[in-house]
Length: 211
Image (cartoon, rainbow, N blue to C red; front, side, top):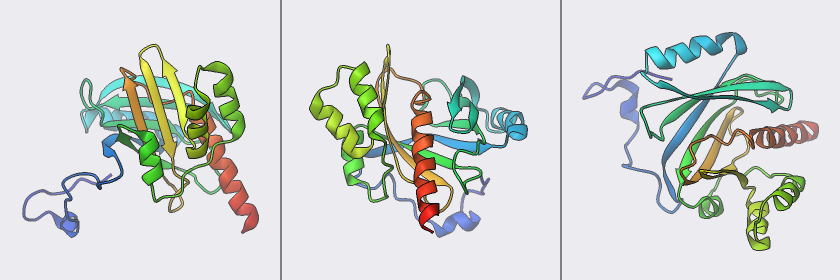
């Protein structure tokens, strides 16, 4: 995270040209939220920083079981109804060689179309996840086949639904996610996070075994 000057003396930010919006043809409409991994003993310090320095207000707090232990997550928001959010996750040894994975969740109105247009390698999700979806939810065979083919993770609540597609780990620690919110869903896909983390871990273990 960098604090930069604005105006004519913007410093290194002058090396970048503002595009005015997301690239055309991807379906991406903006940033939904950003995820920062924090070591366990820095978690409260980071939460205080985002609240006191950045002015973010406390929102959702939760936890879920990751491949190698419990992950604690907090999602302070930049005002009511804002889609620009920051999630703070406890560091976990869920991926070999990725001590502090970071991710950017990009919003889209059609995650299936965005996944088809993506140029980055998308994360494959095991078939047993979709067998579980088929058993729990009333999804059409065609819809389920699309989810399986593109690696879509799907979460539903009484308020709506959340569809997510992730890339593989890029550049050693960065993950991009494409997310679609349906209805009044206001969560972060925490129920499907263990599936995503396990899939990333499995992918990296396989890559390490071939190295």
